[in-house]
Length: 446
Ligand code: PHE
Image 1: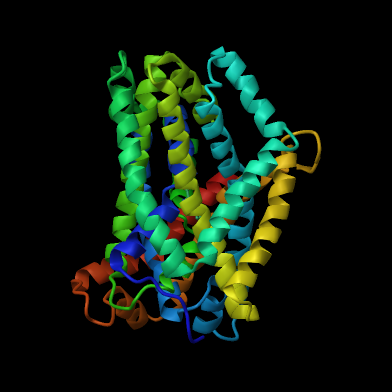
Image 2: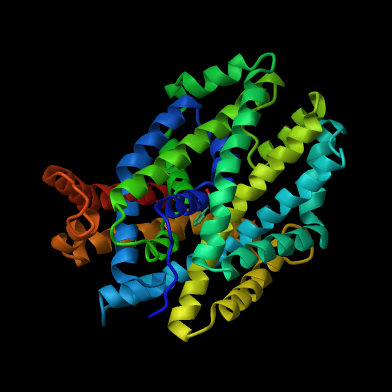
């Protein structure tokens, strides 16, 4: 496995990790879930899940990736040779393939809406915008072309390599993303009537909290932190041994959570200022916001910026998903990076085309009343990702030895961590995270 790619700088690693974590999950999923789950109350539960349940899972995936120095499939094989854990490795490559297929379709919509905003296509009232959205996504040609553009751009970055592609571009895109979301948030909170949105975000209303709120919060934490998907394992395999796993993971989680809150501040005050219901699902971003942009001065410019933000956030996540496949094809089958990217493009592109067509009448693949797009979205975030993350945390806690974990957490003794801190992390990895995830999943499925 000589000549493996690597990240060059610590800030490069951090921005690539943050780029993977920050995505459509923060910008449309999080605000919508807030909308249906009582605002601030949901935020409190979400924060708890991110830092108590999910962060230990991130430590685990990081440890598996860096210790093995291999792709997500190879990692389990290397760390536990001749065991059944290879099956989990297969899952760690299958899940990102499915996720990136429907993710690219939504990525295509973001480009489509950027173009629509630039052409001032939003002045048609909220009903018209609802129709525009459903016509756009169910059309047999337009969304496929945009999806292919999105996927091709993501593949180009991956083809350039870890350092010269992923690291280089995320380092430019992530700071730009933060600046743009702050611009939009400032515009949103200065709208007349924005106060109601802010109080919705920051005054908890626990009466809206149900069992479902807990499930939604956990699923969102998994999705948003890119867990259970082979992504953290793969990126960690390119990280130098001297970097701190605890530091990088915590900073990624903090950046991701800060961005989600900024997205809430950018979206909710505007939604409330225009008297719109906050619980719109995907429409919140693609129907409600265009309506708002059509009502305010310079709305078109803001619309272009907003959908560009969505696009950048989505592409840095898609890159991290494609890299899982590319690393796998390279290391397990000896493909060159370019060949691996080409195979990934055609494989993912094919599933994504079917996904996009399933939104219209062209492809009727239905299971449990869901079309292919909804099915992939649902199964990957509610089943495959939590199962993948659960396997990783069980693997780290019960298959790897405690000295191995502590060796990784302290980077071979160079990162100073108190003994009690290591004990607490180990306890969270062994007991708290797996039990919590199992309990919440059983609660959802039974
Ligand atoms: N975390 C990304 C988001 O919030 C999605 C993602 C999931 C990316 C899994 C990589 C792996 O949009």
